[in-house]
Length: 233
Length: 355
Image 1 (cartoon, rainbow over the protein chains, first blue to last red):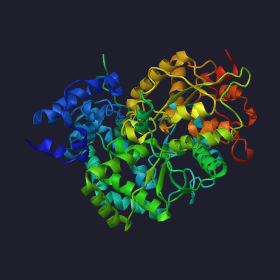
Image 2 (cartoon, helix red, strand yellow):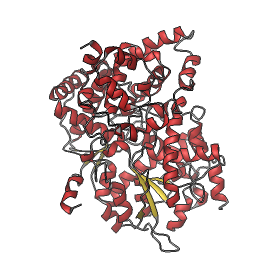
Image 3 (cartoon, each protein chain N blue to C red):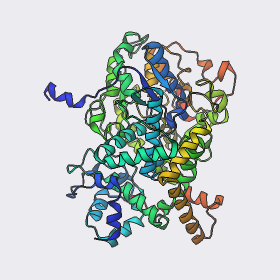
C-alpha cells in the first residue's frame, strides 16, 4: 500500500466512485470521450484498482486523465455502481496537488481554465460573463454572438434592467460584500491555495518551455497547442 | 412495465414558494429565458419566486473542470443554502443543470459523510458568519414548468401544431446529462425514461420523436469546450446527435440544460460553415429552451423571449406555429433602437432563400 492510492482515498468522491470494477467495459462503450480520444475509462479504473503505485503515478502524469468530459454518462450504466468520471475527478485533483499536471499537454491547460473561469468566479461571482466570450477566441459562436458581443448593453437591457448594475436580474453586478464572502470561502477551504499551486507549477512548466507563464505566448500555447496524438485512429 | 413500477420514476416537485438560483450560462446566452421563467411563474401561474441578487455562481463549471476543490464548491453551495434560508424559502429552484446535479451531489455526499456537512458548516461560518438549513425540495426549473404544464396548456394561445396542416409538430428532446445521469431518482423519469421535456411537448400538442442518440451528451465536456484546442470533442458529439435526429425531420429541438441549446445551436452553424451541411430544410433545426417554448405557446413575442440571440433561424418554427411576429423588429435593441444586425451566414441565407 503506497502513498498515491492512500491519497486518492482521502477524496470522498473516490470512495463513492470506486467499489470494484469487473472490467466489463460498459463505461467505455457509452463514453463520449472514448469515441473521440484515444481514451479508455475501463482501463483507467482497472489500473487504479491494482493499487500499483508506479502505474498510478504514470496516470497522474498522463494525457489520458484529462480527456473525460465529466458528463457522467458512465454512472448510471456501471453494473457495479462505480463512477469512472468520479475516479477521474480524484486523479485530476491529486495530479494538480502533486504538480504532475504540467507533464502533459492537456494537463497544462488547467492554467488556462484557472485564468478564465477561476478568475471570473472571484472577480465577478460568475463562471462566465459575456465580454469574456470574445469572438476571436470563439469563432464557433457565429455572427449573431459577434453582434451581441459588440452591442451587449443594448441587447441585454432588453431582458433585464440591471445589466452590469446592482439589483436582481440576469448578468447583474454582484455586490462586493457577496464577492468578499466567496473569496473568503476560497481562502478558508483551500480553493485559493489550489489556484496558487496551479500558478506556481505552471511557472515552472513555462520556464521549462522557455516562456513566462504570464505571457500571451504561453497562454496562447495553452489554448491552442495540439500534438495530434490525442485522437482515436 | 406495470403501472405501479413507474412510481420510482416520479419525483416530488414543490408547488410554490421557490428560491430561484440563476445559471451562469443561461444568463449569458439566453437571458430572455430566465426572464420568461419569472414572467410565467409570477404572471401566468401566480407563484412566489424569490430572485435574490445576493446569490452567486455555484462554481460548477470550475468544479467540473477540476480547478475548484470539492471542499470549496460544497461551501459555496452551503452559502447558496444560507441565502435561501435568510430569504425565508425552503424550495431551491436552480436554472442550471450543472448546478442542479451539483446540489444533489453535495446533499448526497453530506448524507453519506456527515463529517463533510459538519466541515462545510464550520468553514462557511468561519468565512461568512452564515448558517443554513438544507432545502426541503430541490427541483430544476424545468421540473417546475413540467409540474405546471397543464395549467400552461390551459392558458396557451398556440398549440404545437402546424397552423396550415393541423398536424402535430415533431419535437426531439435533449436532456442535460447532469439532470438524471448522476442521480436518476432526482429526475422525472430517471436516467432511462426522462419525461420532463417530453411531458411538456405532449401537453402542449406536439409529438415527441425518438432518435437513437437521444441520451448522448451534447459535447460540452467542460474543459473540452473551454479550451479552444479541445473543441473538436464538443462539435463531434453534437454532430453525432444531429446525424441521428435529422432523418426523423424534427421541427425543433427542446432542451433543459443551459449549455446544451447553445452548443446544439452554435455547432449547427459551425458545421454549416465548415462542411456546407445543414440539418433542417430552412437553415437548420431550431433549438429552444423550455422557457422559450412555454413562452411561445403562451403567445409571448419571440423577440422578447430572446429568440433573436440564436444562430439557427427560428422563423421556420414560428411560421409553422402561426405565431404573429414582426420580422423587422428582430434585431432592434431596447426601446426599438437600431443597432445593426448580424452578418449573413449560410444558415441565415438558407432561411432567406428556402430550398
